[in-house]
Image (cartoon, rainbow, N blue to C red; front, side):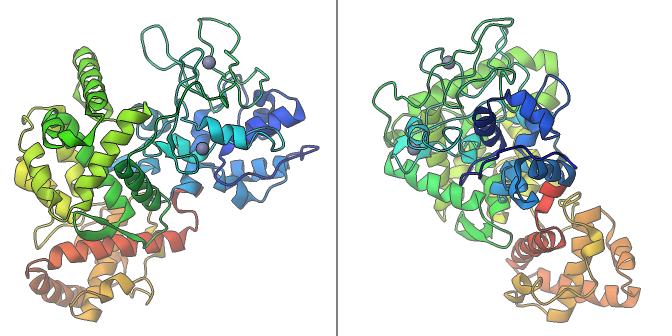
Length: 501
Ligand SMILES: [Zn+2]
Ligand SMILES: [Zn+2]
């Protein structure tokens, strides 16, 4: 049992662990690192940044005991707790296991720094312990503050270091990230913790709750994109959003967003010409040029795999990020957006990193996006789309527990299947088999045996459902529905999804 602290704090709405512990440390007049020790989150001089994303149950219990919270409140102080629909936070992402290091390199979760709204920091300065750092500021699609109608800031106006960060090394790479930078220094939570020099220099200390000039205002397209992305990120299992004219899961939507940005980056400056009226395109151009420069410098040293992952992340700076996200959502909002995408996709050289990236992404995108990619870039057959007799890849390994899947699906799990015009009993049996395959990677026959479905019943389902799948659109609609059933099953099997692992 962890000893409760003499005083604690109620978490503010939208707050996550780094900001919460910073307020608490300030209130108790202790070092953030010392508080980290008391909460059982660290034992040495480094405060691991991975706690930003998720806590295991043991860690959540210790934080809850120390801070006088309920364990569910401790889980809610993580990004996984706050953005269940945002796929880049998943342990299994785009068909691979994601470690905290790959997540940091990927650039789709801002683990090394935080954007911020100076006006929000100022508005919450009166709270016990100081102002609130919002968790959503760590997600690259959060680029504006609706309350204050302004783009977020990301750098300290005094030292120009990224806010809430340990900054860069002299070679331009990030210094090792920590949950709270300079964790041994006691500083007011509104002050910049970046240490501009080398060695043990003091943190900058600039107050970040003071605007350093007139704020940048978002365009209506940026505000719209921001709302669409926020809605999908906070979506619970079973919630659907629109992408390329189809209703899809939030997970597919975010994979479509990433694929679109890869296509835009890879084919740049095609989009600059096609959407010339969009404004601020020059800032995106500068970002793409910087990515290409870094890519050229590192290609030799790192080899394809790592570069393929690190290429194409969204900009840290909010103006190009807002422009790029607004452009992406405009394309995905358009029911015929696949025609626009096809122009960009077909311009990609087959050896380009964007091409490699899209080949990896294709099976994880919505059916319309997969189709757009398949039609425009040459893909190995197995990576592209769902032909009528699609095999079922292990897309949910590590998240969906096969032990929770019954041979006969419960009524409320099967709800997404009910909209399909297929033989009901056979479809449900087929879906149970496919769920086991999604969870384990077993063959179809082995998955049926796992569920103790007799081989005769397997055969009759196969014959019936395959005949139904042949009709145009059925295979895509089925795959879409299966994906939603899986999300419901995960939410039910484990109320916090992957965050408890
Ligand atoms: Zn604000
Ligand atoms: Zn600073």
